[in-house]
Image (cartoon, rainbow, N blue to C red; front, side):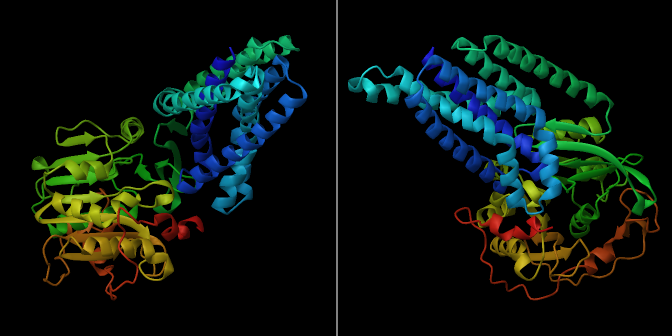
Amino acid sequence: MLELTVFLSGALVMVLEMVGARVLAPHVGTSAVVWTSLIGVVLACLAVGAWAGGRLADKNLSRRGLAFALAGAGIGSGLTAFCHEVIGQWVTAAVGNLYAAAVLAAVCIFALPAFFFGMITPYTIRLRIESVDSSGATVGRLYALSTAGSIVGTFLGGFILISYWGSTTILWGVAACMLGLSLCHGGGKLRLRAALLALCGLMAVLAATYGRWHDGRALSHLVESPYNSIRVYEGVDWAQNGRAVRLMATDPGYSQSGMYLEAPNELYFRYTQFYALGPHFAPGASRVLMLGGGGYSVPKWLLSDKTPLAKPADARVTVVELDPAMTDTARRWFALRDDPRLTVRHEDARAFLNRQREQYDLVFVDVFNSHYAVPFQMGTREAAAALRRAVAPGGVMLMNVISAVEGPDGQLFQSIFKALEQSFAEVRVYCAGGEAVDRLQNLMVVAFPERRDMVEAKPEARPEAVVTAGSGAAEKAPGAVDISTMLASRYTGPCTFATPALTDDFAPVERYTLVLLRQ
C-alpha cells in the first residue's frame, strides 16, 4: 500500500500542477512568466513539505501521521478548488505587475496542497525502511515510483483530464483521491475524513453539472483545452454606435477575436482590415494560407460576399490552427460555417511550414501566445525561410506583430524584420494601430519575394478601394479603413536596426516583450 500511495501521490501532484496553469490563466495569462511562477512556487512548497515530512517522521512515525499528510493534501486541493476564482480576481485587482501577480497567485492558490504533497514521500520512505542495510534500495525504489507516478500524472493531466473536464472539477477529484488514500491508512477521525471525501465527490459532480448549466445560459463562456483557457463574452461597442459584439480572449485584459452579432462576416478589429493589403499587392490571388485561426474572422471575411479577393469562387483558403478548441469555439459562437473552399489543419504553424511544399499567393500570419507575443519559433530567421518557401512568385506575406517600430519597445518587431529581410527581397511595415512609431501597436509587416519598385499610388475612387469591414457601403463606414489610408500608414524611416535577427538558437522574445507586461 505504501508503494501505491507514493505512486498515486506523485501522479496527482503533477495533475495539480498541470491544472494550475488553467486555473491561473484567466487572471494572469499563460505566458512563460506564469509557468515559471507556478513551477517555482510548487517546487518551493514541495521542498518545504519534504523537510517538514522528514522531521515529522523522526518525531512521530506512524500510519496515522501519513494519513494526516494525505488528508492535508486532499483538504488543500479542496480549498484550492473552492477559492481559486476569488483569489485570482483579488490578485488581479490588487497587483498590477505581472511577475508579482503570477507569483502571489501561485502562492495563495497552490502553496497549501503542494506543501502537504511534499510531506508524503519522505514520510513514506521512513515508514518503509526496515534496516540501514537496505535503506538505499528502499529510498531509490520509492523515489522511482514517485517519479513514475509524476510521469503518468503529467500525461494524464495534459492529454486527457484537461480535455474532458473543467479545472475546478479536476481539483475536486484530486482532493477526493487524496482523502481516499488517507482513509486507506487508517488513523483517527475516520468519520470526518470519510465525510470530507463524500463532500469532495459531491462537489466534483456539482462543479461539472453547474459548468454545463452555466454554459448554456450565461452570456460568458469558458472553454479549456490543452493549449488555452478561452473566454467568450458579449458586450456593446459604443464607439461603433452601440453595436453588440462578441469577443474571445485567452489572456486577461486582451481580446483575441471579435465579431459584430448582426454582421458575423464583418471585421471588428482595425488591424485585421490591413490584411486587405494582400489582395491589393497580389490582385489575382486565389490561394490563401492563414497561420492562426482564432475566431476565424479573416477567413470568414475572405470567403464572404464582401471579400477583397478578385475571384472568390476560385478561392482556396487553408487555415492552420494549433488548438482544435479554437475552431470549435469559432463554429459554436463566431458563425464559422463549413465551406468547400476552406480547409482547416490543426497543428503547429511552424511544424506545418517546415514540411509542406505547396505555395500560396497570400500568406497571412496572425499567431500569438500569451500577452500577444509572437511565438518565438515563428519570428526567427529559419521561420522566415520557411515562410518564403510558402509564398508563390508574385505573392506576398503579411504578419501581424504587436510592437513599437522604433525605440526600446520596438525590439520584437526589429528582430523579426531583420529575420525576414534575410529571406525576402523586400520587407515593409505599416502602422495598423495609427500610433506614433515609438508606441506599442499592431504592425502589419509585409514581405515580398521579389522587389517592388513601383511607387504606391493612391487607388482610384471606387467601392473596392474602401475596406468597410463587410458593410458593403461605398462610403466610409464607422471603423472602416480605405486602402489609401493603409498605404499612407507605411513606416518610411530608416530600417537599419541594431537589434539582431531572431534565430531558433537565440530568441529572447520574453525580454523584448516586457513592454506588453507594462500595459
